[in-house]
Length: 319
Image 1 (cartoon, helix red, strand yellow):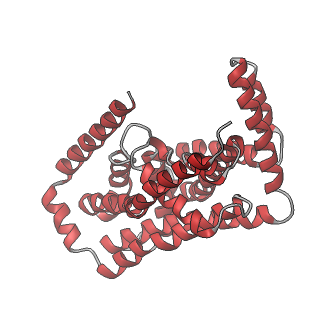
Image 2: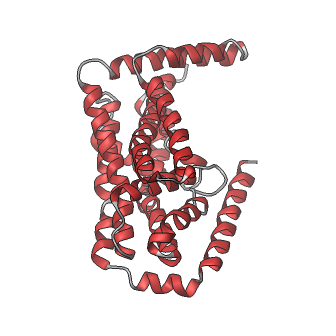
């Protein structure tokens, strides 16, 4: 069944891309590729390196120094590889499996860590996107509606991440309606989630990590601006932040492979009026390269994790 879901997602991505490129005109897309400014393009592509490094650094901080910087980089790269096959960037959540079997994290702690990281990522992206959408909205009700919806999601994430018992209460509510076996696991997750949130808000670490996350996602959105600048005239930064936020969210819809297709269509729709549809289609390809380059770099680490996990498990004493 999982294999069929992957094949369906790939088929949807290929279908959307074929229809999109056919509507735009492949010859015009090829011309836009040839006319791209190599300097701006190179700067945009090399942004992948510092963005990956900062992501790994933040993960190391969230792991409470139980995972080194080198290991954090490998985890982030391997997760990028898995994101090509799993929907909605669930490869990032799969890091919990490595933390359990390689670093001997308790399952609940590993899961709470990666879920906290993903929620922090989403909140940081939306923190840029909401004011940008309000700025560019003007009289267009669609942008205001998007800002309202995204603002509501940001408020919910902020409450769940805040040092309030909202998340714990919601989890306890879920426990009441599930079987006892599953409920016990969820209850243990709630306990670890509470500890994670309490640790995060102790001292000054929360302010530092939140600032890192906010600047990190500012860098991701700026990378879109660099790619757009390589393909045409400079787009106002606020407009770029709004368009890129919507495009990234469109890529998270679990209908395609790695967001390919839905993200590209959103980019053509939002960037097309400023860049031209052909250049916007190329921008979609460059946006995919943001995920493809770290994914390729993470390929060697997938097999490395598997081999090391087998060795570690084999070394465990038999009860």
